[in-house]
Amino acid sequence: MLRNKLIYILSIIFNNSYFVIISLFIGIIISFFSLIAGFLFIIASVIINLSFSLINSIHFRNFHRELISLPSENGIGRLSNFKNTRLENYSKIINRVLDSLSQEIVQTLENKITSDAIINSINEGILIINSNKELENFNPALVKLLGTNIDPYVGMNINDFVRNDEFLSMIDEVFSTKENKSIELNLFSDEKSILVYAAPFFLSDQEPFNQILVIFTNLTEIRKADNSRKEFFSNVSHELRTPLAGIKASAETLEISKDQSTTEKFTLLILEDVDRMNKLIDEMMSLTQMDLGEENFVKKDTSVNKMIEDTYNRFIFQCEDLGINLKIKKLEQDITIKVDISKIEQVFGNLLSNAIKWTSKDGNINISASLSKTSILFSVSDDGEGIIEEHLPFIFERFFKSDSSRSKVGSGLGLAISKHIIEAHKGDIFVESEITKGSKFTFSIPK
Image (cartoon, one colour):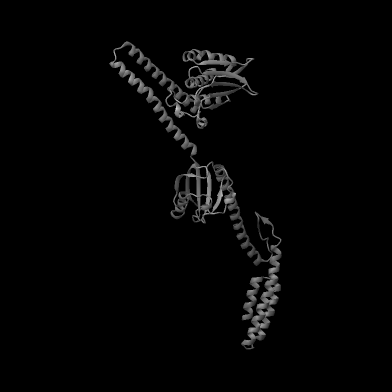
């Protein structure tokens, strides 16, 4: 009975005549020793185990021979078809496992490639932090934002990358609450204004939350624009308030005065304040058009020497009335350049008005033109009070006034407008100045 069962089981498992012969042999041995006591039965069991080991060894060598000659699909081998029915069943099972593994690997690679492509295409800085709070991935936009290489920080704790208590507290909170958080911070070495948004990052619906996606948006320029806008309106309010106060005071004086000379004097003051307000409004309109890119430049060929002469003629009578000596120096050989003459006249007007403002009686103002290799250089120089050295870097900013100029009439917009006009002509403008020795403003126009 035992022999028949063993033979039947072996024939089903191995389905091979060679194995059947071995099984019969084992069966005979078992029958022979079945009459012997339990001690001999143990020996029979050992022999059976050894026989199975021999059979499995032969079977495994055949199986291994099949396995080492496998082709490759998607980097994962597949078992070829076996002639043995049972081995064929085994191979089918293994092939199904290999197919599933292959698909998972390919899908994982595709997901990584896709996610990297998406992250790299985003303009905002992206940082991925894993469950160990280590920097796991980032995009080129973050490198650009920081201005430094981030590769050495990959795998390091986030505390070693961003040393900001508010930022680190936010990351801890996202890990603990699994909720989105955002905060605006001044981060990194140059104190950029950064909006930081952090959110739990799920690789798939089946996998638990184990990463944080952090988005860095640079708000520095926006904040600068906001501050400039606030400063602009504050300065405009101040500049308008001064002439309005003058007009009000003059009007009140006229209301109670019956003297003709007093009436004429304060009427003239009112007109001057109105002109001042009109000029300020015109300058603000010019700046608005510049900011919106709506300013129209009509450039035509214009004589350099004629530009110098026209500027001289516009200001000579004012200078004579103030006792200021106005001189010009033209090119030895006149040439023409393409400019918007009305805009260049505005620049000359701003520079001459400033020079006259800071030059005392018997002082000197010079207007000159000279040639460089690529440009025409125009200069307006004076021997007036000069500009404090610390103020020179800010002299072309909107509404900038040095402390000594607070008592002088002016909006502080003229030089900012002049700079914009010259840059629109592809030129440059700069200043040289020394206290008590005067100033020299020079601008260039390409030939």
